[in-house]
Image (cartoon, rainbow, N blue to C red; front, side, top):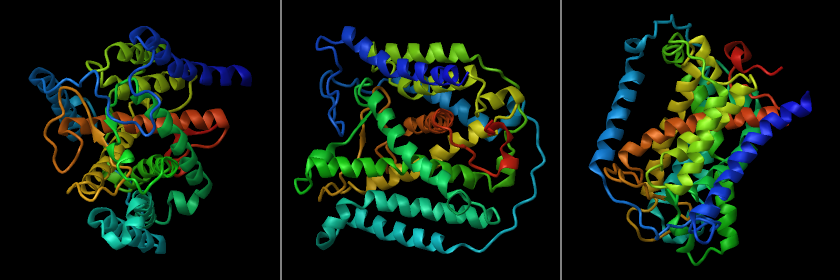
Length: 392
């Protein structure tokens, strides 16, 4: 039984990993997409990314406006009001909140001001900035929740999120090669003071921050009682696991042949595959909660990634504007077809921010999948608040 369970977890994800390689064999004369394997990924110049397309922009804008209206006014879509629980008893901000705040300010200054005498610190500022911010968020959660946070109450789980983040973001980055680079890292080859080995180490260290940051936001959003239950009583939808899996794998295959028209499949396809695996194996997840009418876990993790994304994009943009001196090796740029317009203090095009909603689900679904595969508990909140994600 255990062997069958492991096989059910591993086989679909193995197919997800291999199928773009198989498709590439037929899609490209050299059997791999241009730029494949270059790490950190650089811009793909041939074929050229399509420019702005008004029709694609309008259709995507209309979809995102409907989604925004849904998030703001869920009662218009059949959601019922739920009485909010009493707020948590507050605690004073803990010492690590202040430590995290100090780290955030110091490394924020270094990454944006780029003072010449401290350039060696500027080169490595990205990851300490984010660990300062994650620590600050955890301290804020601790104070708002009456003494509960991942760092304070679940340090082992928090450590696991770091390890999962390192491998999971690298795995997610792998699929970007087949989308011909929705994003790339131009500064990774523009700082002669840093060797390629150093650059790789800096990137891998930065990857450890992604999952912890999103999960800290999730626990923070749950300290707002009204928001925590805003989407808890909605339409009951039982999604078919096999269909999710097939559609996800299909999208990831077609993306290889049509990377620009299906640029969005990078965010949706992976999410559908992991969701399909968990639903098929009857593993509790934000997707399975939809069958109970509880949309809160799915929506709150999506919003967590979106809110965190605002900081990702803000700090990234400020680290390279003005351009000189070039000092952030982790700086990224988007090369999204059709809609790469309207940049508000961000390299991310305005409509691209909604990709973070899907990414938030990817983060959690991957984490639950890893928990089942390697046998660790994936609770993020207090057990009595998260019945659906129990571990058998």
